[in-house]
Amino acid sequence: MNLVGWAFTLLFSVAQAKSIVLSNDDGWAEINIRVFYDLLTKAGNSVVLSAPAENESGTGSSDSPPTKLTKPCEFNSCPSGSPATGFNASNPRLNYVNSYPVTSIRYGIQTVAPKYFGSTAPDLAVAGPNVGANLGSTVLISGTVGAATEAAKEGIPSIAFSGTSGSQTAWTAPVDIYVSVYGALSTNVTQTLVNSAKPYLPANTWLNVNFPAVSSSTCNSPTKFKFVLSRINSAGSGTPADVRTCSSDRLPTESTVVRTTGCYASVSVGVASSKKDASASTQSVVLAKLSKILSCLPA
Image (tube, rainbow, N blue to C red; front, side, top):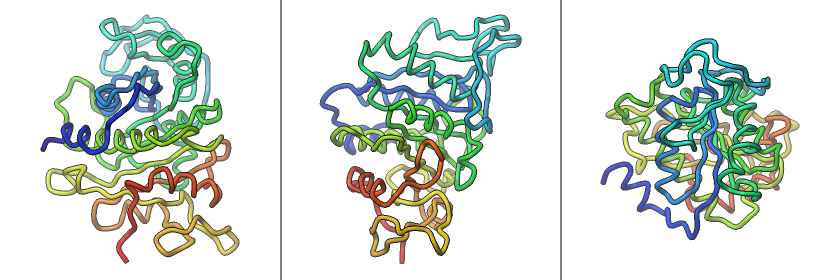
């Protein structure tokens, strides 16, 4: 079975379209976000993309009004002199914002989404898949995480996805296996969450999901992956207990999960306003909602 076929036979029966805003920090024309957009749309969702005109990796939660382009958008996806915000002529759901990821996703939520979703707020915001993992303290500088946490602070449940493999690649390039695998896995997590009851996540909460390396010989199919509930930061001696799962009240760090031999993807639960780990009670909500896809690390 091909990767796309796997994505739509596993569990993607959607009773009605969910409204989703999609962003990243690698730019609106990067291949990961475009493939993810296609997969979410094929899964039956109503999706709008609102992402930076340029690669804005490592800009965290920076925010600034968009400005007119003084050079072409990344991969020449719009010409120099283009307005501060714009869209793809053949698909106006694909939008660029000449500013940071935070600014971009807010534009998507406040300006683009109402054109397609009306007065109803988006059901979910997703960011990525990022080119490169965002593990531990890296969440503090990640623009992809910045976009996701901004959405959560605006009242929209959100997920940030990041993959270890890959490099900055235009949407017009051939689709590498890591792009397909990360897209399918991200769609799996997204659909599992939106197939649960609302609210999808507690207020001020975002999920930080990281995937290990993919190659032609390693973790080369989404069916080989297992998701593990994790924490962002290492726990100290005074850190309160995590939710109890896998016979422990201390979750592994996302770095531990992703670096474990095998194809393990981490799912951490974070507080959007601080980008720190959420409480055990909030973790327990996510554990229940994603229980169908969560596993444990090998003993």
